[in-house]
Image 1 (cartoon, rainbow, N blue to C red):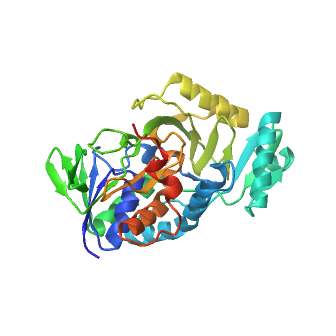
Image 2 (cartoon, rainbow, N blue to C red):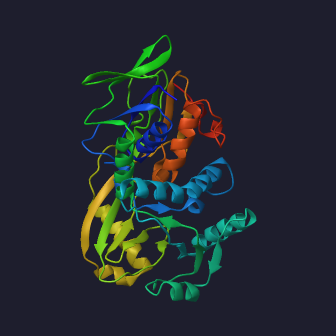
Image 3 (cartoon, helix red, strand yellow):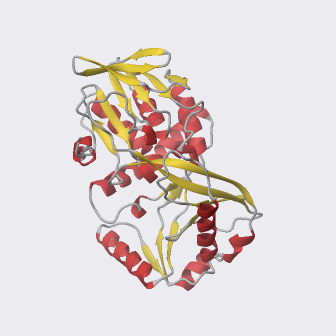
Amino acid sequence: MSGRAVVIGGGIIGLAVTDELTRRGVRVELLERSAELGAEASSAAAGILAPQSETDGPGPFLDLLLAAARIIPETVSRLEALTGIPIGHRVSGMLTLAFSDEEQCSLERALEWQRKAGLAAEQLDPAAARRMEPALDGPLLGVVCWPETAILDPRQFVRAYGQAARAQGAGIRLGTPAQRVEVRDGRAVGVRTPAGLVEADWVIHCAGPWAGEEIGLPFSVPAVPARGQILQFSTKAPLFSRVVKSPRAYLVQRSEEILIAGTTLEYAGFDKRTTEEGIGKIRDGMEEISAATGALPVQSTWAGLRPDMPDHLPVLGLTPLEGFLAASGHFRNGILLAPLTGRLIADTLLGVRPSLDLAPFGISRFKQP
């Protein structure tokens, strides 16, 4: 297969699309506005791969998440073999905690529909949960264990994807924002940048939280940035072996000496600053889970801008502009959905029937101005 594609955006989604297209023989130029790849939500993420906790019931989105989870291990293995970069993928399991009657009812509803759907989920009493994770000492009312939840290191995932894309011949242009999509006779034929026009047969919009910016499209992409603040702590020994999550905080033991905690959900535009209020909320949520976290020294804090859509679902596939495809708005699930998104976009671009119906994720679901 030959042909040229321009990918707008060098986060994990743009990198996965670039990787998949180059593997199939398409010449790709990736345009990233920042001076580094994955500078926003991709590198800021905690790296939790938890498809069962991201939806309220069966449907197309759950199918998308589960399909994505199935191909993560093979993608990680391929990237590690190609680049030598350890991505830190492992199946950890996750405990979701309830501290009130309302939270307990919510957990029981999730447990009921997931069991009916044949998904792995187990209800635990607080004593059993504390035997599994001795650091849990908050006033638990109930716990559900999702044994198939996994984690990885997002920054290493970004590095590996970037190195693989370059090794496979992709051009990566850092510090190169997309100014305007070039359209001729009703078809996208390239992207204008400060350095000039990058011509292509296809353009793929993977601009993350910037996907809603005006770049001359004949339709709007209603993406907005959703800030999430993260804290990193130093631990002398691991406090947890699984991901631990409550409605107010989550904890991820990324390594023996590093504990990640998050997160907030704030619609503050493109402001990436951490705040005392946000940090305080995360710390309060942590200490509700485990008093042992209260004395941990903070190593660093940061915030990422997650690309959100009005319905919190991604936009995937063809658009009203011929030759222009979208892969944006992955919100909290960009790391999980990246490899599958790459495959689905490559299939669509190359005329191969995708493994999943992309109609529920089309741009046409949003009313245009």
